[in-house]
Image 1 (cartoon, rainbow, N blue to C red):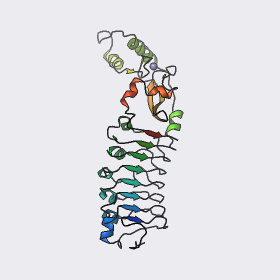
Image 2 (cartoon, protein in one colour):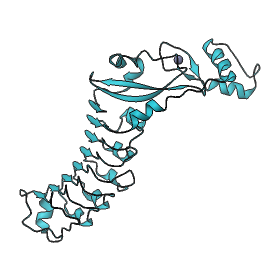
Image 3 (cartoon, rainbow, N blue to C red):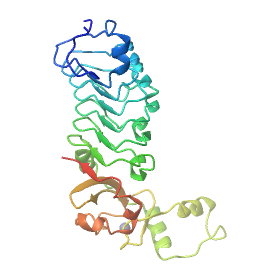
Image 4 (cartoon, rainbow, N blue to C red):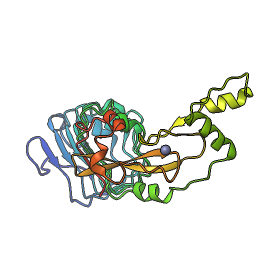
Length: 286
Ligand SMILES: [Zn+2]
């Protein structure tokens, strides 16, 4: 459908939502109108693609393409360098749907990809330095990317919504434990008792093995592990209300983290000091 000049909305708003469109073309929108439009609403249509002519909305700051049938976001999107808000809820998007150069949209502050088919949070999104709200609820996310723990790039992020994703369920299902081998048990004894060893006493491969011991993260344990460990979910508490599940590894099932049953104390534990809780203010897990 061609868009007529009389489309609803204020001077800088072009509202084409709820029109049951299955395609959209901006050819009949005057150049003046295109370059002055700052908000474009295309939600609640039946679009399966966005036209390349989208790139001509050079002043666009707000784009809502929610509730369509989009399985891909057009490369034209990456030309909208003034974009601050991108709403693309309830489409058919996954991690392969995004333009390769999405990272060029460095002005993005709000991104909503809820109700799509993402199985992971695309790393491109973790590079937006101005992003303060990222909504990813109702997807198929099973992992939180490790980068998010450091939040070095997401310095402004205040809200991360992950409601309705399988990651919490999966965490619980995957908590399995294989008993340690005799080699591992011997290695653990040597390391926890601080027995001295060298290549004069042991074959080089055993020395290498012993040197690869991982320290159990439970501060009250002091033990080590090698290949056998218990995957454990630790809920890191933010603001006493929202909790973010983080995977960590313990030396044995008996070695329960004193923090895990008491989320409030998580913020006090040593290893949580690295998580800038003041930056990530709301983590919504439903
Ligand atoms: Zn331990």
